[in-house]
Structure formats: C-alpha cells, structure tokens
Length: 243
Image 1 (cartoon, one colour):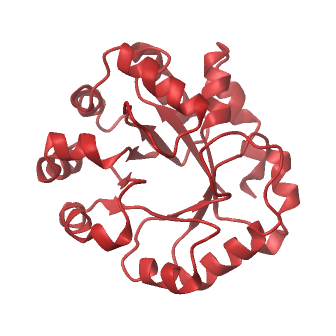
Image 2: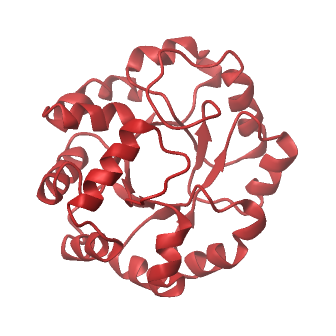
C-alpha cells in the first residue's frame, strides 16, 4: 500500500517545510502532496486552513514554491503533486505553470474546485507536459460519473472517504466500502483514500478486499508537525501497512 502524506507549503516555516519535505521523502513517502496556500479554501478543515493562513503570513507564494522545487529538482525519490485551488493557478498563468512544472519534474496536480465538466483545457495542457490531473471522487459520486472520470483520469484517483471538509475522524462512514467498490469497478488506476486518516488502526474497519491502494493523510500530519514532532516519527507508524 502506498503512503501519500500531504503538507502545506511554507508550514510551519518556509525552511521547516523544506526540511519536512526531505524527511517525508526519506521515510517512506511514495507520493507527497504539496498544498498551495490559499486565502479562501472551500474543502479544507480547520487544521489545514490554519496551516494555509500561517504559510501565507510567512510569505509563501506559488512562485516561491516552484522556485524552491526547481532548486531541489532530482533530490526526491517520491513523486510530487501540487494540490491547490484553481484561482492561484490561473493568476500565475496555467500554460506557463504546466510548462514550468514539467521542467521541475512534478508528477501531478489536484485541483478540488475544478469539476470534470470544466477540466478539459487544463487537463490537455498538463497532459501535453506529461503531468497528471488527479481525479477526485466522493461517496455521492455515482458509478456513471466515476466511469466518466475514468475515461480521462490518469495517475491515481483521490477517493474522499466522507462528504465535508478535511480533518481527522475517529471512524469512517458505514458506506465507505461501497464507495471503494464503486471506484474499483470504474477505474483501472490506483485508488488513494483520504479525508480522516489519523492512525493505521483505522484500516481495520475496512474489509481487506475493499481496501485502497494508497492512503492519504494530511490533517493528522500537520497537527503532528504543529506540535513540534518530527515527521519521521509519524511516518514510522505507517510503514507497516505496506504489505
């Protein structure tokens, strides 16, 4: 099972972020989702929103993130994905962003507020540069809609465990297995489950045959970092689920 940590760029400090990114890469991350701070998030819970606002206070911009990644090109084993809202990407210039991301070696983008019906031109620009636009599906995504995503989706699929905003949850909804089975029926690329993971023990609630190919964790990791604890310690709790 792949491990996909999420970390807000520039949190808790700019230098601290780059240090943590390196540490995640060295301690088992297969893919790392880098959050692009935005002042008006719609899907982020309080932990990620606070981290994003802190990063903005630290002076983080999309330009700074890209330049930092450019300087560190080739230093990471993990695939790197930028996760952010469409507005900052449009302000930067999407075609320019795609071309620079190719030069940097980014693997993909996740844009939560870009629906399938509007993503074609952006997907085309990214695809031309060899970059994936990661699809997001949720418990209320029908099989037909998932199949529509599957026709164009590449990389992996971000399966949202529960409707609502990001954040740590004590348990998953009872229909999670149905969501995963529906996604498995539609897609032929890896399923990555996110929204709510805080401990490996939560996997026990998902039948073995329904489990995803990857786990995404964000809020729990951000809280861990906010408490001043090393990310290696967090990752070591998860490396046992790879089997």
